[in-house]
Image 1 (cartoon, rainbow, N blue to C red):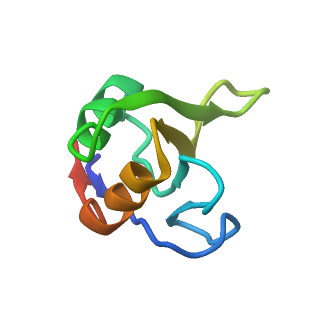
Image 2 (image 1 turned 90 degrees about the vertical axis):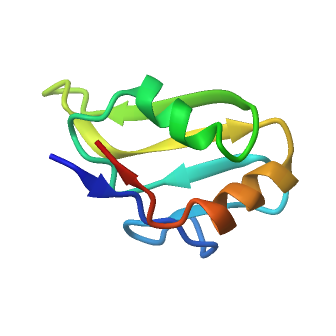
Length: 92
């Protein structure tokens, strides 16, 4: 199943979106399609700059992805660029 990653500059609790705090370069990514791999997302996110780390969160009991994750960039400017330029990007 394909889908659009929805990103926004709101707070981290915002459902189905993407946000970065002003104090760090880690970006929350929501609405990740279940069949998407971390490598695929790293490729998408690297369009904004060098990805230090990407992590999808998984349910402890089922082992299935939760549909969200975190992308860490080298600096806050790159993270903010990702939010601005990769909004609603389609994956899969």
